[in-house]
Length: 566
Ligand code: ATP
Ligand code: MG
Image 1 (cartoon, protein in one colour):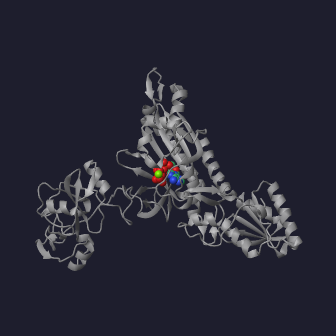
Image 2 (cartoon, protein in one colour):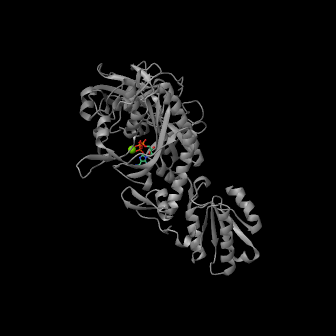
Image 3 (spheres, protein in one colour):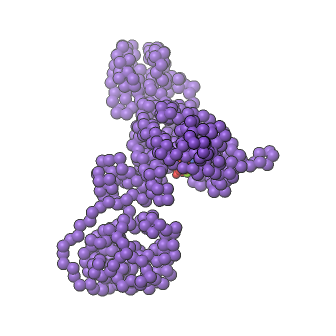
């Protein structure tokens, strides 16, 4: 491709409205342009990357035995009414009416469409299992489109759907997709983890989110530094054995702590370690008061409270509720002498505290030398706190670290939700009608392009991994007006493209500085510069990733290229 007439408009300055690096670089390198909030065009360079990403996804889907098809974006409202999602989906669903006043939606996902197709055309167990997929534009009227194509309103997704005879079959289909995803994100050179997405009602193992570990993202991921353990911090289990010190238990006393409410203030005021403090928080769990205790250096996790009680609602008590149940104020709460109607539970770490400090349930007062078991009894010790950096990994391997995560893929066991709602049954080997057991599997194809840039860039621009680079080679004659440089560049361009390399030739009459800056911004893996030594048949090869530069004779060039790009 010749750069002179190529639509790859570069920007020197960082666009004001682009907060994250991938968005900035995609605009600056001329990969995308915005037409409305969350709606983007892919320019030629951006599209080349998008297609490479697509093709790797396609390749691994096909290898896993999934069949590619293509479904419409326009979906009739009736389909969504049948599944119950016309109302449930809310304002994210983009709805419109045709000229006959019939209602439609632009597909945000395709469970309804695929399930009715399979319902109508697959009836025997002999056809199952079957996994179908497509790569297609999705529409979601996101509340907050942002970060460029990371959260768009129109975006490219690979969505796959599996149909099985039973739940054992679903487990196998799910595992196949899980393995394919692992291969796909490895081919993109991404540092990712499969994260158990929800350990609540869905039963834990039934959904994984593939998260790229990053400095931006909407979820914080706790991961092990030496195993593949990873979980959203909201649900990561804590698996720590706490030790109890053998110092003698002292007599409990009440102390004045005027205006000292936080663990920080109290520990400073009384000159005690955070670990000696007991943090007491009153929650209303399905309308009942529950006092929850954690150690002063820990944070309460309300999702764990919810799971412990199998509750519908867990909310921090208001000041009024606190006065009602404890006759006190937030900041001075504690477990000693509690009203019988208040349930008391504590995190495991609390049990090992000796001579602790807690609120006295009296304003401006705390208790010292409080000892669990002697001064109060709890109805249970259980895991109630957030995991923290430095905790041992719950799988026993390594130490926990935190990173933000970008969700690039999602695998999900649907079960029979859609097949039952839409009547997708098959006849089993006994001739009995059974609902198909389904799974759904998404990859954010366009989001992945941005995630790759988040991980692969430096201060000068993008540094594409070879597998998705828009071009393999960037040929740059330094001065196009010099005959020997231009002629050698043209000759190499022809030779290399004939050998089926993907080559971008910078045939623009620009200053060398401009050409090199653009080259760094584009991030093509190998740059071949044709300069003053063109007449001696010598060119310079620069590896974008390492910055390494070497001069080579043109008859050695082929060898170098093969070594690097294959
Ligand atoms: P999120 O929590 O980020 O909104 P989701 O749970 O709504 O994601 P799914 O419905 O599971 O996402 O969609 C499958 C994949 O599509 C996601 O894993 C993500 O990579 C991608 N995706 C979802 N929403 C968007 C969006 N607005 N823009 C770009 N990609 C998206
Ligand atoms: Mg979403």
